[in-house]
Image 1 (cartoon, rainbow over the protein chains, first blue to last red):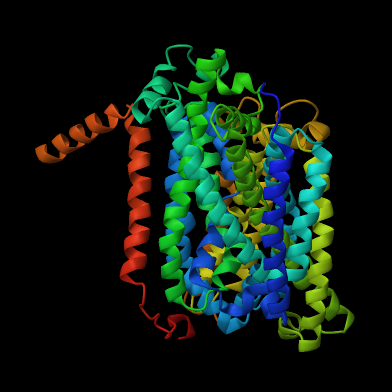
Image 2: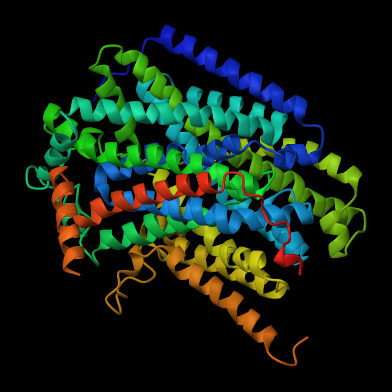
Length: 551
Length: 59
């Protein structure tokens, strides 16, 4: 593999400039954060361009660039369908269907977080509490994966100690989230989004230029299906080449479609850290304007990652006679970091480009981590803390628990800051225990879990005039439990990596030989089981309570 | 119908010339570009449109 070796002086100069800008925006956020509403939803008056870049930079992180870019490098351009789903569901449906209604309802209900929004919409403290707990269980995994994405690139580029990189990155982000609230988070997101956009365009241009042009590079990648061909293991799983979709019905096809396309594509619609951004918009017009910027942003950033990942195979094969995954030693999370170091290293001003791309990935990681931290901190310090406060004060009615008093809201901002700091410690601990090739899967795990738990109830409440709270409670609980059971005990890769199944049932599979009716159940993502169950429960309660004679 | 098939074949030929022959892959690229274009056109056409504050959810 390539030796790490970026000029540290150049990196230090660029990093200091970038961190100074970050600190400036954090200070701006700190000055503007006077009330809890400022800390949580930026006073509901954020600029549309800042909103779009913040949404895009939060949505797309190192998980998309390093994690899914690496998966594309290993499995080919089929992931471009995820790009299409990201724009369709993650942006168009999310903004125009969910965003506008969530903004209006959030303003009317004076909701400050996603669990708060659900709790107040259904008038159910249980839903607020349960949603906050789901976030606190699932989100550290996703946040740790994003953190690792940034750290991997720092290690590959600078050759510095992994632990040092992990801790430094975590501390910087925690400081500006805890003190600047969502204003600092979103303005930094916008800066980071701008850097990501330029960095990814540069990467795409340099990659095609190095490989001899668009047609030459794509044709060479297509030809690699015959020479050297895909590995025997991947060929058995259904892979046919890097510019072809996996064989219909194969194990790889099921993983592609159910985990990567559905899990992440649909999962994006019920993301707590994204939903809260709708509530920062001043008007529906802001969301229309943000759509313009967001569409181009996602196309460029994700499209580049999913195109360059597979093309790295051409480079590695030409230079070293190996495919990308062979060259990096089997860890998909290292394909993009190593490729970027290699490809920029061969050009004039290459080191400057590597430093700029390092900044791009740092920005991508920091924007998402900051938003996830903000969401986790708010869940712990606002959603859960207010329940504890209410219980201590002898307040038990839904109205008392959900709406509280002004004095408690001010207290909960301090609690959110403490919550943020506690959650980064947990996240770093999770990051330390993660294996290789985990970033894309951890992302799919979190998005699948949140979609299974929240999507049916969230969709119901934004369209319904009389929300069915009982149905929502059961839908959220059934979606969560079904996802957990399938993910922990049946789904092959998840169960293997988490290890609970083997610890309880020995080294075996819970559904070892069940392939009826010809489906490889172990390759089917928990989302495909849990989301329909959650939706069916929601629908059943709605139908039951609409029958004549029901109150 | 014949026109449509001809158009698809031509498109396939053009995109095949870009080095990607599998329709499942290049159609994903086309779809993504189309969706991004939709975002730009929609946002541009409704750039100044005031949202109806009358919320049907409020009844």
